[in-house]
Figure (cartoon, rainbow over the protein chains, first blue to last red):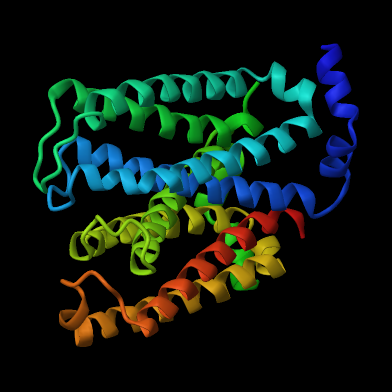
Amino acid sequence: MDFLAWLQGTALATAVAETIWAYPLLETLHALGMAMLLGSLGLTNLRVMGYKRELPLIGTQDLLPLAWLGFTINAASGIALFTSDAIYFFSSYTFRIKLVLIALAGVNAVILAHKVFREPATSAGAEAGALAKGLAAASLVFWVGAAVAGRLIAYTP
Amino acid sequence: MSFLAWLESTPIAAAITTSVWMYATFETIHYIGLAMLVGSIMLVDLRLLGFARSLPLPPMLGLLPWVWVGFLINVVTGSLMFIYNATSFGMNKAFWLKMTLLALAGINALVFTVAVARTGERWLAAGQAPAAIKAVATLSLALWLGVMAAGRWMAYV
């Protein structure tokens, strides 16, 4: 709690909480980052699951920089939003669920990357294995779940 | 009674006002619709601009139905949220900015559709969009970012 109280007292937290434009600006960036992340990972995961076989499986790796950019934007904007009301956010169960879902998505992504992309099939129409398809489906559930949980923080305990 | 006041007096508006979960649910679904719409149009626009070249253009343009599904979801959820608070949203400058940007994004999409129908066979298979199409794609990215930002700002003006 001491750390959270300190966080909430930093200049960054005060700026986010007290200027008119900082909060909506950070929220807009957070929505943009989410669209980057869900757009790029959504297509990648759906392709692993067998959607749009005209796209080469290996080619979806080109989308990774967009996913990382979205993740970085959202880590930065998310931390700034968090500091503005750190004690409240930390005590929110919905916020904690969101963090758990992101952690699960991260672990899932590492396994998926090893399963699918380490020795990738390069041709269009290449088919991922059943385990990889399951992991891709789980990834979609985790990321959509994280977005839903994030939106519901304001409405739930 | 004005149209907006009438909207607010409809049973739909009353149901949303009385319910504890409806507004939060619409907002969450609106967020998922945004991810589908902006996430997929961003992939198409970035691909037109030369990002992720190992993904062939024709199947990437095949992602556009996702934009329509996201758009329809957001028209429905957006209308419901508007009805709930019509007189207030009707006076909200950020709301009218959002509608203006949406209309411009629609015109831009129409220009894109006509241009692809007329000239697409000259460049689609080669995977390299001409400069005019790149300009349309850049404008599309800017307009959708503006729509998101104006939407977020509605809560703050």
